[in-house]
Length: 90
Length: 149
Image (tube, rainbow over all chains, first blue to last red; front, side, top):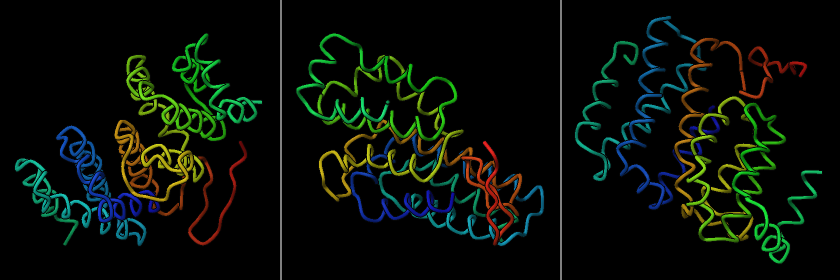
């Protein structure tokens, strides 16, 4: 999964056409659902494994990038910030 | 055998002949089935990549037979580095066009990528101490143990 996350992050940085894909609220929501599900599951299990922390950090990095993207809808930006302020991320 | 079929189809004259008589979109879906192995999935993805390059209407036709949705359902349980590469080759139109650019030529495959991510993250959340890949190759962190297929 780490490789997949990194490829998504790298592509988002290097490709404007890839950034455009996230203009679709449906597409962006798919990422947000995956992210939120992971945060919720790892919070519930009080998971402190190195691997989990690394993955959470990379996912949050990408989520924040989306939140700062002009093309992403405001409610979805808000959703990013509400997920990021979950307890486990502190 | 599948491999030789696909390498034959990568020649455009044969591709045109094949698709003149046979519904390639449905064939792709039939070849995938419900639970393809990563090897089969990779080959079918290559075939899709060849088709996308050969025909500007392939994407729309594939959508009409719910091909992109089927990939979204089927890929999460058959992911490995080769499938990963084949999927991104489709996304960026690489290999077939011999380019190394980063322009998205097929956005239709993005939902499948994100659904792989979702399923993969769910698996990690359940067993974080295992350096799991979705293709069934598991190991304790630092050691790799191949699970028998």
